[in-house]
Image 1 (tube, rainbow, N blue to C red):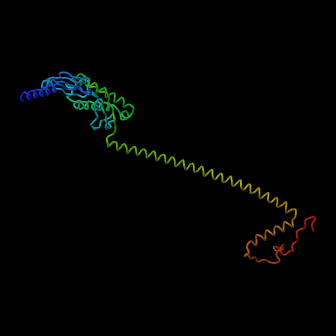
Image 2 (cartoon, helix red, strand yellow):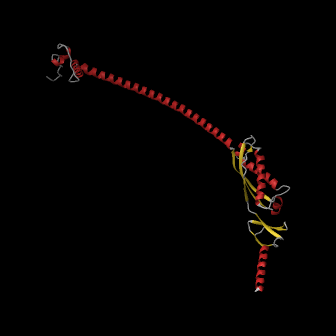
Image 3 (cartoon, rainbow, N blue to C red):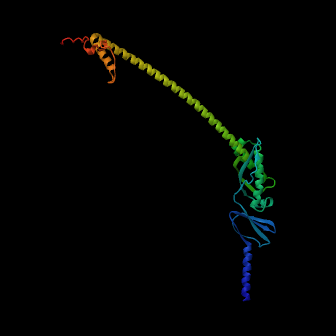
Length: 301
């Protein structure tokens, strides 16, 4: 029984020892093997690997993927005109040489991110100091980002290389600080109001001009129509007078009789009308029958 237990214990120890000597490197990682605190070798290919058991050799892993570093500092930067602006940015970077990275930067990705954040911010501050707000907000922003990337690469690949590569540097936001932003918004609002008032004034003046022109055309049109109407009316009155004159000139007695009838019609327009006249007045001459009767037409008795 003791022999069986000894064999089982030996197998467990052997398995534990074998397990401590085996390790797997993922395709997303570098495997760094240390021998008594010194880097023995770096495994870049994924798969199963072997090493000496601890404490003779240990293994650590470093990410080999493309990493993203976002700006975490909201401290404003000064432009060429001494304007205070807040710049948000991000950097895409990766570890290319694990040995150089561990020796010069740190044991993990966080150490590289901290140092890279400082370098990128200094590069942005230096480049923004050379440029105006207009350059930062216009198409010249691409030149700004390219210059920052160049400066960062000069640092990380300089005389003491970090073992990293900076793939891209981008600005995500460029804005004034809150106090200046509020002032800018107020100026923009005032400018928009000024333009709106100017447009309203111009529109009102143009409206008055159009209304005045329409009123003038209306008066001219009415005057021309009235003149034409009076002319037509005068021509009609003249034609009517000529017609009456021709008709009454042929028979004066009939003309007098017709005019007397018109006078009676106008005088006795209502039943309640009362007139006080001298019976011998010429006004009732036709009604009394004392007037001269109209001459009978030729051929009639």
